[in-house]
Image 1 (cartoon, one colour):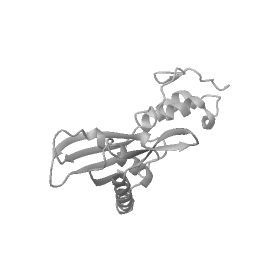
Image 2: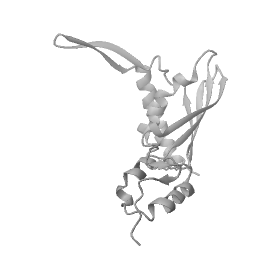
Image 3: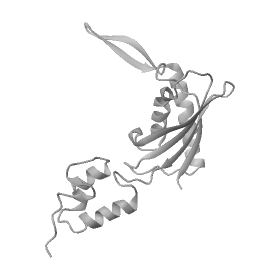
Image 4: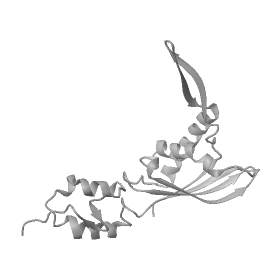
Length: 187
């Protein structure tokens, strides 16, 4: 099984990962966001660490569109902190480091939260989901394909219906596991 195990120091929270300044263009003023110094340091450190671990643990980046589970255990330095506030920066770093193609395919699961004031951290176990698009697994996809696509006139490579299903979209053209746009091949 393709699995990657990481330990991250507590990253900047969503409340502190950006700083803001007022910029101007002529007479027009606007607010400009930029990463805080704490965010820059964390991103540099964690990106290098993740890239090293990808090599050491022989992690294979899942194909585009494949979902990835991130089982996370938080060790916070004190009570009354919200673990979900610490997700943004590490998820972006994991994308940048090449763990997955885009963090829109990352499914974080906060498994447990502990208080460890001496060693605050996040322990992360990453593994690829067996699902492919809307299909539960390869067997489910093959079953749909055999029942719908294998005897359809449409070119599978350019079929918009199949492409949408593989992109996790629920669409009207499919009822359950039946394609309503299927055009039977001539016998």
